Length: 106
Length: 122
Image 1 (cartoon, rainbow over the protein chains, first blue to last red):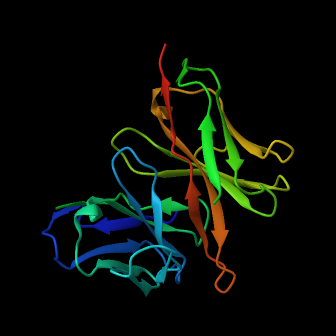
Image 2 (cartoon, each protein chain N blue to C red; image 1 turned 120 degrees about the vertical axis):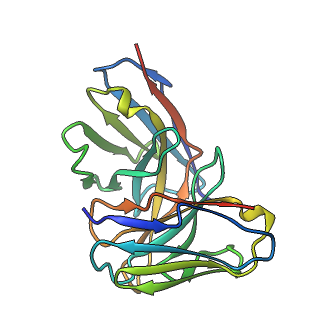
């Protein structure tokens, strides 16, 4: 199985801050990488697919980049509604696997 | 806008079979891939498997011996069965629709149900 490792596990930031979350894959996955946002008690929501393509309706302050084994999700100016846990997920090989999550606290 | 809704028993006894159904509304189940994902309390996400509307499946090897996903196109539903459950199978179970990026071949879990809490306990 491909292991996905996110860092940090949690972070505390203020409204307006620039926040970056990293995701590393245990082997190359080219750009077969998706990012999700999950708020407490809710289903995950797709933010970015194919490493850098913004899902329709997602604010442009979210940016994804990377390829191979190293990926980042950046929130350019944190908003109060961005308090959530963020997961990366690889779809290069089955079984599809997720990172352990990064909790963003405002 | 497509909507998904999980349904099924919220409590299952150890060693029995967990059964959930996902009902799709606002769109057809045909020509898409459909998936199940679970999340144990306070933990991360685990992909269980997916099914194409035609019936072909792909399961997580960690669960493959116990899992079965089926589709009923006449009812616009797909279902999950997980046999011989233990407390470790206690989780919120989500159904989701896959979207494919035809330029790159990437699949993503684009539409999710609200989730169904399933507790395994006697």
